[in-house]
Length: 314
Image 1 (spheres, rainbow, N blue to C red):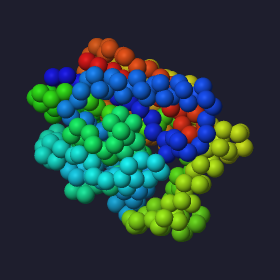
Image 2 (cartoon, rainbow, N blue to C red):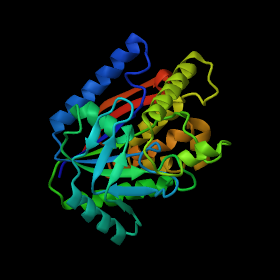
Image 3 (cartoon, one colour):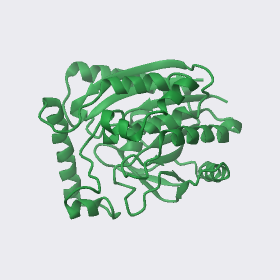
Image 4 (cartoon, one colour):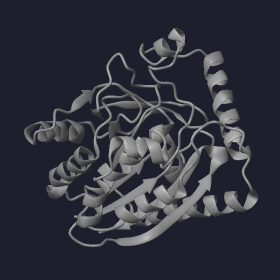
């Protein structure tokens, strides 16, 4: 049984907003290093834990966690659209195992996902033509159903137990975070039309997609120029998160002591996406330190991202 963990931030603004050449060079070098290590590991199964940004999941029905037996990418921003290579039988078996293990997990037979899922697959394999994928959605935007830290850790451990008897080389990917607070609307928004947009599931028009892209691009450039009212990126929080995930059981337990309010206050409303890393990491052993072969971090305000990449092997 061979397992590895890849934690990687995602950002819809990659390739859209300009960043400094030295930042671009180090970012692309880190992505290339991750790609080479994934290639060398040669996973036969990819367990991908990621969020959504009101493209597939909406407040009319928002589960804390959901496993997809089928999934397709909507192709937002610069990510590819189309079906993902989902291992449907394993997804169903995992769902049954989790129910037996005390997790009331949601199941989607036709999951729609966005750049939160697709970007990391695109960066690692160039497209959605990947090894078999087991997609697991984590709600990181809609209170009060955002899963708590200890539940995320417990879910990862349960997934790990389920796959203990699976001989395939398995790569666990956590896609999300780290500290950031992009202009994602909430149900507290004063405009009823905006609230309705994140409640009712519907396909946006091309004009709406373009307007959203322009809004997010402008928000990133405003953050970089210091003219934004958005919460700034918090590198100290990000690095503490990454150090803890590369540690052992005691480090993960300490991390789980974070309160929901402290995450939002220190790292931003969308920092809950980082919990995708915690779920994926917790599927690997925590009784010993793992081999770390990649540890990259860069604050990139133009991308509204504390951008991290980490690769761990058992």
